[in-house]
Length: 628
Image (cartoon, rainbow, N blue to C red; front, top):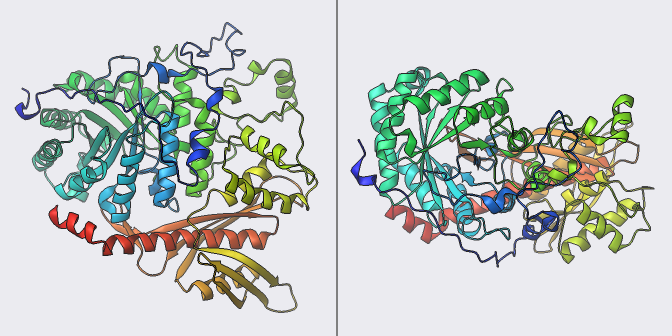
């Protein structure tokens, strides 16, 4: 029995074919233009694997499914083989400790996700803070209205909300200006959650879910996703009943979360298949999956869910997310692509040549670096050290590579044989940046080239890893509030470590401070604190060499929290927690690297404090809040 208020099928969205015209953001060009000339416009150029044939590898090209992407209709996909990619890097991914991004960084990542070809971007949890609402609104207005590529694709912009009117109001306010807005609301349905967290009966949960989905639709939102949290541990019959009720209320997508990563692939495939077979009205919605990685099965469970009938998958770049993370976008997409025959001809709209760039960007902006053996995007994913493997690779690459590095945008070979060093000129260096996927403007290049020359004077040969560390330190950074001027330290066994540091403010004012500490880094950090005078607590500190050798560049990552009540609201529990800020730095001097990382983390924190303060003092914000 259909719910009469929403009996009209949602209409397809129209897409503005005009390209983005306002790209004033520092990094926008770097993520919208590189590698675009390498894409094949032919959608039939896919490279499928066949164990009995060696013809699958030489093609070395990418299936560009963007040109054949089905027209977007919220509750229906015209091609049953098409799988929508729902990226939640900016929402669930940012719940990883230390992964906090600034609003400008979120916008950069959202632009790249659009260019990558994701169908839906879950841009955040607007009710968590005014800053998060503004960030989601900015993404909706820019990324949600202007295509990032020549194909004209504009992603759906989604905001998360708990099943209450305040959250849904905030989510709708944040995404409503997008061309294709979506509100995603959820409530727990497992006995353990209903009893111990919600403290509500089954009947109360059903009533809340039904009422809040209907409320979201009543606001004018044409696309509402509903998630029964902890569906993997929920009673099946009760789950069918809840889903039936929210379908009647107007839900267009039903997302089935394995919230704690508890199920095995066979169980999860059966769960999706059973929902598809036993839920009245299921033919009028899209089934989605959201799999956590607590047992290391998120990707396997996601693929199993697709085999069971799901046609939307919720993933994150690099698999980041709460606890052990989420299903990895790159793993799910490449598994579907490589094993297309076994997956029944399924395909996605992802432009895979942006995968490496997306991975690097998310790593730099979140401070969460992937392990070397991470599938697809790890440093060792395409490295071959074993003699037997090397012999096979030299004879035929298909012996040990099932994916071409070119297919994911990993291009390291230099056809001209150029080796960078201190005598290399601007043209050679810029050519190397383009080869690595970084298309930066002249001012950014001037800043980078100055740092490059400083390092090249001290190193005989500059590697790709050095280049990437320097570009990260110069380009992938928050809004500049303080910069490092000069630094001098003394340390050793003969006395206390001391540091003298000069910082330069954004208005040009210079401040100098001295301090002592247990070591040169401690002394430097204390000197910085005495200048900035904003309480901060160092939570994490790590350092790595980007390559071998005593002259290697050191990269440092720090995570700090404010000591003055800087908090955020957790999307699932609603509890407040201390907001963390990460920073990274790179230099041949390990103390300088450490100082750069700490200043960058402080710049993030100061920028966030400033944004929150401005939002609270804005009369426009106060008016809009009171009207809600």
